[in-house]
Amino acid sequence: MRHGSVLLAIAATLFASQVTAKNVPSALKAFYNKARSGGDCTGHDALQAGFYNTEWSGGHTTYCTKYLPTGKGFYLKGPESDLANMDIDCDGEQSSGDGRCGSSTDTQGQTRWGLRHLEKYGVRDLNANIHPYVVLGNEGSYSPTFDPRTVGVEPLSIVAVVCGDQLVYGVWGDTNGDDNEHPMVGEASLALATACYGPNISGNSGHDESDVLYIAFAGKEAVPVSAKWDADSYEMFEESITAQGDKLVAQLFGDKSPTTGGSDPHHTPASGDGDSDNDEEDSKQNHKSGGTRRNTIPRLCHIILIVLIAFA
Image 1 (tube, rainbow, N blue to C red):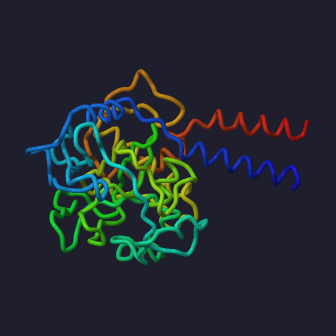
Image 2 (image 1 turned 180 degrees about the vertical axis):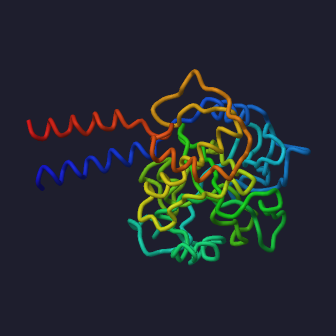
Image 3 (image 1 turned 180 degrees about the horizontal axis):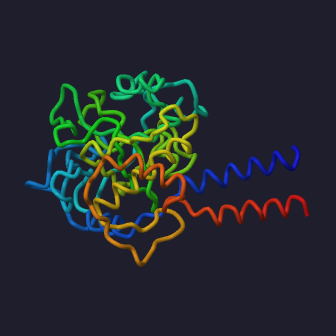
């Protein structure tokens, strides 16, 4: 392989790592710790209880609003210090991938929202190898069930996922059906799980620890206005929703600490005005300026260093 090809391959890898790796903002990290240390989610904080994190865990996981502002969304909360785990969903478009979804034994040919919502974008459905989607809501011939739309969460809206000490954005793309004995929660697409935990994840091998925080945002402002649904890679799609995800986190938790390149100890509270009309413009501005999403200087330094080494 020529030097130029090697450099391009390495540069692409560096670019992908800069796009996908995000630090957890300090206020969101504080919420994560508070949710884990706050015990069970009960009473008016529980939108619906009685769900299973695993088939043998007991029905102790809840769609929870504890410590969140009223009407702003929910997260999955298990008993005591548990949150949720991350099983792997490989439903949807099956035309690409590296074969890791092949080990899944319950793959469906379509997702709950992808087929009906994405045709206008020229996309047949969500693709678990590309789109970082989260499975939320329970519907089927079992009890209990839960529909996130009843509390204002829109199909395909952004979901913030804190996993493996990093922040990853996904979308609400599928629901939990009745293909298990119990009503299950805690599942995400292969693409999202890989971003969290690396390439050892596969269709039948997820993350078993109940330490994953899924936050679903309520309101139309959480629907990604600049998402590249026709992206051909996870990195391209995730980058297209990151600016809006950062804005949602800042509005909910009042923290503008950058999600890449380290935390800003001098963060200032977000205005929290919830003006969704400016989402698309804000996204465009972040694409132009780099916003707080990506620290480009270290990436350029890496690339320059690689060039010097290659041609030394």
